Image (cartoon, rainbow, N blue to C red):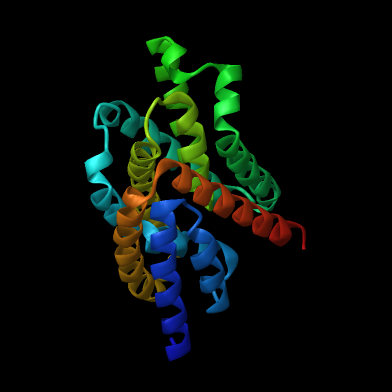
Length: 252
């Protein structure tokens, strides 16, 4: 590996870890960087999942003060199963068709978050939901998000924050902290599956992962200090940019 490739992956890992902790979408930084070093798309995708995983762990640690642990015991099994299914889909099916769908999912998630208050008036505020409906909705959100994360994962954080915000009556900081845990669980499943069955480039992981670890902690600390309205605006803007870039890549 050349010195320029090492520098590129280190910077990309640091930026991705920070972005993932605040808004999600850091894979849009590391995935192209891995492609630029010469990896084919599938190898870059599975290497990226493995490399950014430490950043999710440090994000969880950095946002632990805002974490509501009541949901974890129920949601983690759902996230594990769904992420495993997503990884299997990536390894067993052609990804091109899904690449066309991803940009629209990301843009839809950003729109849901931007108009969250209006949507709540349509679907009902979380406080007006019955406990059963809230629980079912929460599991559905985590299942769909984790499956997508196992398959591709770009802007997973944007999607999770947008959807979780519709079913949880919590601050953005608490929603973001739960998002970090769900992302970390899915990332762990991806690491285990791809380490056994995927074409992971471990040299690239060795460069990118430590940088993502540092960036994840920094981003989580920044997210804790941002007011909810500012954090929401950052996620919406970044999610829109991510969606447009993915749209350009899919149809160019």
